[in-house]
Image 1 (tube, protein in one colour):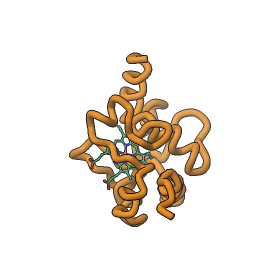
Image 2 (image 1 turned 60 degrees about the vertical axis):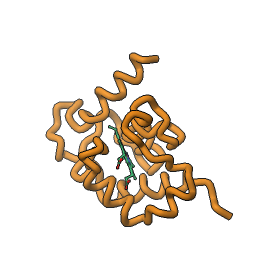
Image 3 (image 1 turned 45 degrees about the horizontal axis):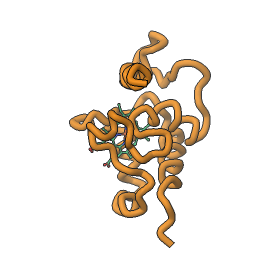
Image 4 (image 1 turned 90 degrees about the vertical axis):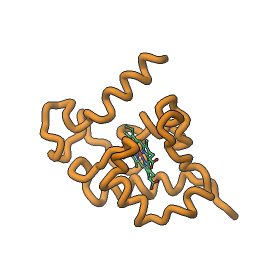
Length: 121
Ligand code: HEC
């Protein structure tokens, strides 16, 4: 279990480099995940948890937000989420996905996490 988490952590920042490609090559290892859900599972779940609650050991330590919280989501409009994923929050170890993901892929993964938030009404 600890090993799996460690492996996920080691893999995460190196995703673009795992196949030896330059980090700005827009490459993810293996078959390229398609759609927000697959991208999330491949690139984000290691830190943010499969369900988006951010309760991985890493997420708790680094203060990953709870994407299932409608309150959190209501304070983070789409443009902010897109900016965070594009440019990261590097001081907090949220990686920047500019160059790794296209603008369309970033939009897809952002709309996926938006759907994780439980509806307010
Ligand atoms: C290496 C771990 C890691 C990975 C991989 C990662 N994140 Fe994060 N993410 C973080 C951390 C840590 C924070 C908390 C940043 C903070 O406190 O501002 C964060 C914060 C965020 C935020 C909130 C930023 C804000 O405005 O407060 C969004 C949105 C987000 N991540 C989306 C994603 C998406 C989408 C992916 C996959 C494409 C992803 N993250 C991959 C660690 C990660």
